[in-house]
Image (cartoon, rainbow, N blue to C red; front, side, top):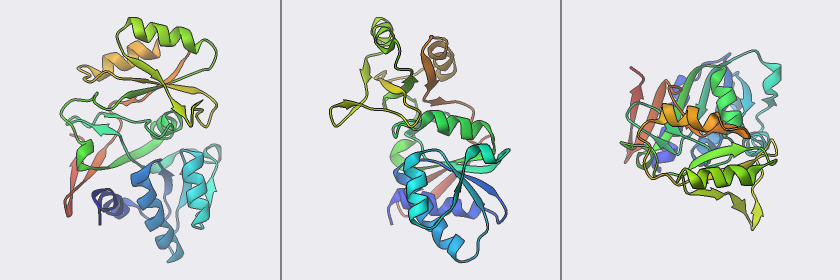
Length: 222
């Protein structure tokens, strides 16, 4: 069993029958959804909401009914992956393009667990490119602004076409290498007109489960 699967299956222990459960997006969440489908088939009763079309399609294919986010008032627990997590449990998310919906779900969740492999746990954020979701109108001016700020921006593409998020926006990935103050940077970028959301998830995760070799490490926010 690989580290992603170990972390994903460990997170199942936090799920209780009757919960409204938020399902994140990405390769680690894939293992969670597969295991969850087995448990629901065995009688676990949860109401699930999803943070992306990708996760919804996977869940539906495995027989999990996904509710619209607007059909629930809150989420008891959201389990999601992360692209990087630092020692303060701040993270970068959005490599899979779902950062806006992931942040909306997180902000309405009573508890948030991130599941990651050991390579994702870092001392300082920034090696992984920071995703910034932007509206299509005027995106080139934002690209130029990020160039002026020396953020080394790259407009995300897929199959030679500009990548579109589930809400029809573009993503600009910033190649920063190192982020000394993630709180300050998040606010600075979000103040720019045209920016929809930033892939910095600060002070959000309450628990991080790390797959390490053949076991898992659980870190809780102090």
